Length: 571
Ligand code: GLY
Image (cartoon, rainbow, N blue to C red; front, side, top):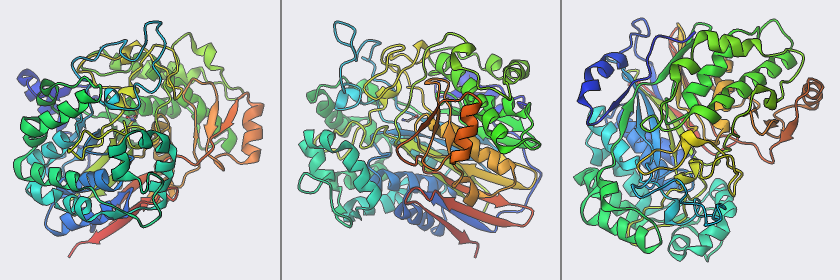
């Protein structure tokens, strides 16, 4: 059942909404509890986890540590997130229970327009939304970090950014994940010599251990620490960025950078079998799709049935929830999202009733709607809690590995290709098979729809923090994680859950290698499902849990990735 929590957003420059939103964000959610016995961080890279611990050891809180981990990930995972990209940070402040999502998602440049990636014949221009500066939205990461430090942190921004400055200047050693990502985008990287110089070795894939040094990025982070976000968004550095983008064929303006601001948005909150689930609101599709799927499943028996039937109804719930994503979701500052209708209990009960336990429902039978976009795979996530019980679930992205593979000269900023998260042409797959709808069409200053789903789960005695990269599959991975929390398991289990996915269209159950064993595949086929095995294991979940009953903290990183979970016991 959904909690009475209207989907309001607090936006800078809208003072009328301020009081209402301030009230909405203060949610008395849990009975008074002791602080956790340890802080914990799980992130996609050991150096980012270590950097976050350093900030906690210096007296920073979870929000300072979130700044450090985000900035460190921007340095050591240039393929997943970065200063040239954006992200969502879901926050829980222990002192007053405030819960909010800081939206640092990129915005389309003001000169963007609906047909900007199409040619005269209405064909999609190959790679235009994926490579080079035309593919890049106005970055939100720096604004997000400065907002976290200013409104929630305890340390000066310069101190929280310091570990990332060091990593950029001293370099970090290439690992296998880095090599894999370079391999994926090698041809693109080789087209841009400045980018290739930074991230390749001898114009090829660097050997393990090869140091990646980013002097310009280190200088930028240091100056942002000293002078604030204005250093990036205004003045000579902004001009350097805009000049570089425009010289490369992009359409950014100084006003685009100057006018960028983060938005604080009320999370989507639901209750599933006594567990409170708090997740990302639009412009992420995560919270709404997750809530729809959970509420559909609330009407199903998941315990008294065999596990194939359980899998089947979970798939059917995914199918139905992702269908509405395709049609209705986009930037809430641009399109009216019928959130109340999409989350109405009778609507979701109706969807639940359409599930036949003995047969897959062909997606075509659910009605005529546009196809759903298959998102890019690369993004990053971290989860953390501090010793006071402050929490952050942060999911950050530059979209495809190495984003737009373009660095405006002299800036050290690897640009995102988040513009490809828009529907660049309705119902028409782009180069990566992406299709979408009108609500998510390109427009100037609009935020592209995301699937990033930073999430909290809260029961009477346990609190969980989770999220993952993985494109459109992010939401189904978080759903499977939440269901595993509901089954009583901890984060070491959530991150390992075998993954399967349905997103309405294409009408197939996707699964990672070993995600479905042969018997499960056979049984699901008998129920009428088409199955498609992904060529690789997907996702990279990082999760933390505070068991308040036994006063223990757990953290886990996905065995599919190279991340690191660590605890910092209280002194
Ligand atoms: N770029 C991935 C997402 O935001 O969904």
